[in-house]
Length: 436
Image (cartoon, rainbow, N blue to C red):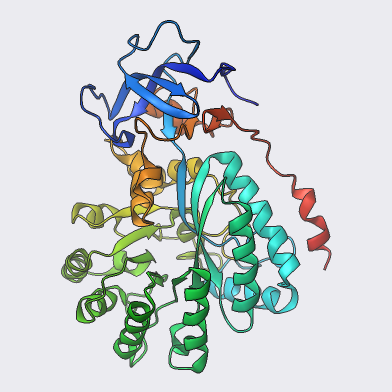
């Protein structure tokens, strides 16, 4: 086990002098927070959290690991990824880095190479990375154009079962809603019901958008499926489907959970339009996930021209309206985003910079822990709680500037009270796939 300290080899021990984000405590009463951080001792008993007490109050008879003020976080939730298309960059690049270039090159690679074995190998690689970085809950969108949906969801189901004791996995079918009135859609809904998936899709400014959204919400309601959509991933001010989605949820009295991702064009609207849209999203109780790294990479990219805007949604305004907001990795080393490693620490570090989520940083840890876990229906995974499993991420960083200034490569990931092997998979493992 790599890291900055050695954990005691005992069934019960103390993580002494730890610094915890107050927002990550299930119960923060009795602790004085400074910059959203509290100090505590954490007692670990047989793989679970026995107590969270003031420093020095833990049983003196137990062996202790002194963190010397180092941070302790709950394990992470990465709620919007694409592990079915991840790590194809060396095989199918995006020469101009544009959104259309990404679409075209992913399509070409999917049609040429996405066999069950190919997808399984790349999903495995992605999950090894996510696990080593400290992720315990992950939702992926899966390209679901026929016949790919049958292949990819069967692979995903096998992977989900195999990884169940390490990362809890959820999957969303990704398709263009211009197919929603075709027989394929009924087959897809039936597949998702069998495979315990979610209905997704990419919304577009179609003349009959409302009718298509009604069909989507009605089908989801009848099948008992939640919804997670790709929305307004463009700089085009004329594209704004977000408000129409909120109207459709209310109109259809849909009782399931609805999440929307990207919502980039919201930031291009005038103040009145943006305010009205946000109010409607809040009324409909729709959650929003921002993908700052991918959005900054793709949006406002024009050959030979410096980008003028950051590409992200109105994150602070959505949060202020009471909407559940989070950030996530999105694409990893594919034509939509050439970089990334499914590391939530990288995601939050870049989100703070891009979205200016600092000054103060008190509640910022929630965007990769507490809030995305709540959105995904697994609230218990996003907090540190007495009696809960000792699934924690330990850092040598003591304060915000230390945490956000380095990649925290020496972190310790603890699962059920024990440090895991954090060795990352070698990219050479993917070489046989890249030679196609």
